Length: 208
Image (cartoon, rainbow, N blue to C red; front, side, top):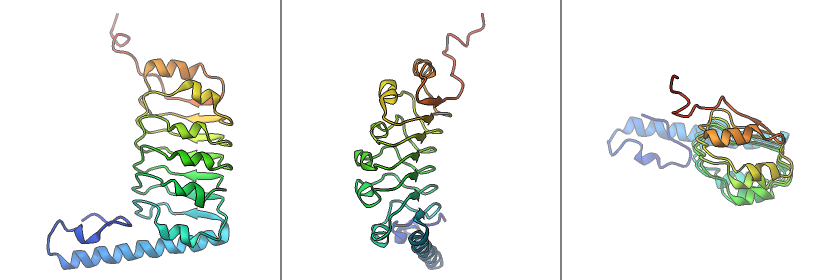
């Protein structure tokens, strides 16, 4: 039986089986997940860095915004969960963060409101389900380092990348970037673009 994700309906975890011990086990696990989240929110009130990695989160619970309402966060780590999206209000509630880690989730898009994160300098969206870089990353005013490796990105808007206000380094390694796009990115001098070796075209792979 899979462990329940925070926010999931644990009553459906048994696929309609009447397995009371399993339901009780899942309930205890969900309770521990909630306790873990609350404990980490309390820690963040002391160090201004919210670490909610590996908390079985399907989304950022509303309770987190409530618990953090009097705390000025500088960093937020949501990695290694099962999050599919970040709500627009995230940028309002955590407007002063400088470091945001969204890696190892199931996201394929980001809300445009993240451009309001005026102090964000580092963003990690690696190991997700992106097929393109979200356009909002080109609009975040102080974003200097972007990690987007290990996604499903085939094409990149090179001109937008070059026009981004503060980008210094973009990691696009381990993405199926098309040969045409790979060549265009290789020619970019600023920001620095990290790429895996270019995949050969079918005709290039033929023995002469």
